Structures are given as C-alpha cells and as structure tokens.
Image (cartoon, rainbow, N blue to C red):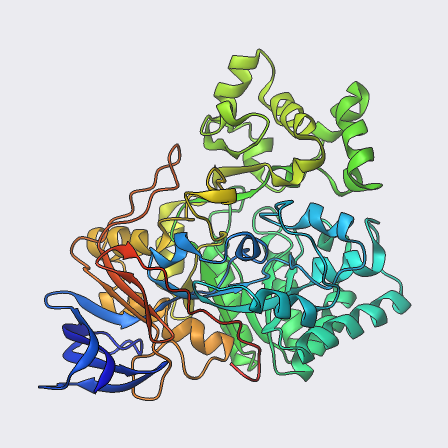
Length: 531
C-alpha cells in the first residue's frame, strides 16, 4: 500500500534520455518505484494517461529570499511545476545583516509586513524554515549583502582588512548551509568591488566546495571583461562557476556570443568546472535605479533623492555613458517598459516613449521623475527591456551546459503580493520554455528541455537526490501536457497562471492537483551538506 501512485504517464526522468511508459510510486517523501505497478494500491492516485511525468522543475536563479517570508506558499512557482528554487542570486541575499534599514533597500520584493529580526545567515535560514513553504529552497549568500554588512552604504573599494571581514562572513554563511556564493557586479554595491576582492571570496567558496554564481560586471560594451573576470576568478580560486543569464545584451558586438562560448571552451580545457543559465525570454527585468552611475548612491537614499531633485545634478546623472542598459544611451525608449511602480501604477505596462509623451518630458527625465516620486521605495521600481535577440537566445539555449531559469520572485495573485509585478517570467517561464522553444521553435527536444530544468540544475547545485525520477530520490514530481502547456502571461498582464500543468508533488505531497492548488505546503529549507 503506497501513499501516492502516478499512473499511466510517459516518464521523462530528468537524465535527458528518451521518455518511457511507467507508473511512479511514492511512499513518504521518496520515490519507491518507477515502472509498471500493476495492481498496487495507494491512498491517492493521479491519472497521467496521455501526459508527461517529470521530476519537479528546479528554478536555479531566483530572488524570492524575502517574498517567501511574506507569502511562503509560492503560488506562482507551484502553478508552473516548480518544486525547488535557489534564492540569493546576483549578490542580493537577506543575510548577513548589520543594519536592517540599509539592507531592506537592496532586497528584491521587500515588504514591511515582515520585520528583519535575523542577523546571521544561519538565523535567516532558521527564520525561513519556520514558514509552511510551498516548495523547497536553497540559498546563496550574496556578495552585495556581505558588502553592506561591512561597508554600509559606502561605494568604494574595500580595504584588505575589510576583505578579511567579508571572507569571515562568507565562511560563516557557507558553514551554516548556504548553497554557494553569488555576486552582482553590475549593481551597487557589488559594482564598487575590485577583482581581488571577488577572487578572495570565491576562494572561500572553493574551501567549502560550494558553487560560485555571478551576474558579471558587463555583458554589452565590455562583455570580454565581464566574462573574463568570472572565468579568471574561477580559475584562480578553483571554485565551481555558474554564469548567470549569460547571453550578451543590446550594445554588444555581433560576434559577442560566439566569442563568449569560445572563452568558456578555453576555460573548460583549463579544467574550470563551469555552467551557465538563461531566462527563456528576450525581455529582461532589473531595478530601474540601476540606470544610475555608482556615485549617485553615495550617502544612501536621502542623498540620492536630493540628487534626483537637483536640476544640475540630474543632468550629470543623465550623462552616465555606461548605464546598465545600452538601450538607454541608444534612446530605444520603445523597447523599455515600466513594470512595477507603487506611486505610478497607472503607467505600468507603458513604454518610456509613451510615458515621456504623456508627461510632456524627455523619457530620461520621466525615468528620474518616477524614481524620485517613489521616495524611500525607489529600489522596488522595476522595468523590462528587450535586451536580447531571439537568435542569440536560441544559440545560447543550444549550448550543452545551458540551464533555464526565471530570474524572478515568487508571487501570488492575492494577499500582500497580489498586485506586485516583477518580471515577464514570474508566472510563465516554464510554460514558455515548452511552448515556444520545444513545441513551436523546436530548439530543444522535450527530454532535453526537461533535463535543463531538472537534472542539470540539480547537478550544478550539488543536490544528489533531486532532479531525477528514480527509486530513492525525493518525490518532487510534475505532471503536464507538452501538447497544450501555454504561457498566458503578457507584458501588460504578466501575473497569469499557465495552462497545461495538471499536478505537482512536493516532497511526496500533492501541492497542485487537476490544475488546482491544494492546501498542502510541504517544502523545506535545504542546507548545503544536508540537502
């Protein structure tokens, strides 16, 4: 007598090999059988006739560190078949904490309903564990959070003594179970660091045999430097490397992707353990404040708001030759859309060409005005840009080591997160992968696409008993129809669940059944070494 049987489906086991007809038997939180289960009985049965049964999808790159505290049920991910996600990417994490007031301004998805009471990474993971999580979670310690804990809001190179303090904080976080170290070198505060600081911290990651994930310093004008710095840090430290959202952005030369892949191959030949990932979308999100030069952030938000209000300083801000998106310097305002703003919710979904026209100002001034109007919450304003050609996205996706991920946060269409918008991929990234790039474009075969969001990310994260359907593995399972799975989100209405996903099992419990969310939250915080 089993707890759960998933009967009659085509099993794609997460290894990349061809699918095969089989039942999946589950007892407790583990898979106990994959094969023909005949007359075996179970307390619950899922009929998977005519559809596909896969490992639960793994979202390798998210920023849900705080939203999982606000609403731990992870509705937006469960409805997409995701059973595990990695938070703390791009240098942003919820710990360590020296000054909560400084940190909360750098946290994606911050909401005042949750007080920051923890200080260490161990305390943060313990706090997260107290919640009834909808999915399982692993967490990176973010270089940005470490920097804020040591340097506060100062935007400058760290001293040797400060680097030693940062090394200790990273060491403590990894000892407490952080899955790895992440950097966000294109954002403040990480953008003020020197390469020697990055190498020093990646050496700590190597000591713990933990993953180093990086949002590189540049992927357009100076893409060689950004990718080269990541590869050099891994080569010098010996750390296992994951390059986040690797595809070159608008502004990079035509040969940038080909050259990037050549650089990766050279590093593989030098025995660097590396992988990379990409969002299955050519519209990418970021915080709108990232358009500003590093000096704009000196002195914290009060000084930044003063600068945004001073006409002469505003002109200096607009003369920034290297904003995070070169769409700005090219004045491609039709390719940039306001995605989230509390004070200007009526403008969300509009291009900055439209916003500038409605306000009667230059689009760049509209950007600065909206940031200023948001006040203390200006870091929560997000925009999306058409940054990547689909041709480059497809070429990246065909790479043998390319995992797919959301680069988003967990959301829900109700409660404190009900009106929050973060990225075009928040509600539809897995469905878009199978609809657009498997069914329509035939870029990947079905088994390969499943591998890119199950077995591959599990391997990169060092999770031995997840990402595969096999006896003994944890019972994370997704049941969906490859012929009908559809991304229903749009830029103007992004928070819409996909269709075609039938059932989701998290640690042996049904979290989604017949397309409906159950009341079960069986997720766990997984600490490195015990995951």
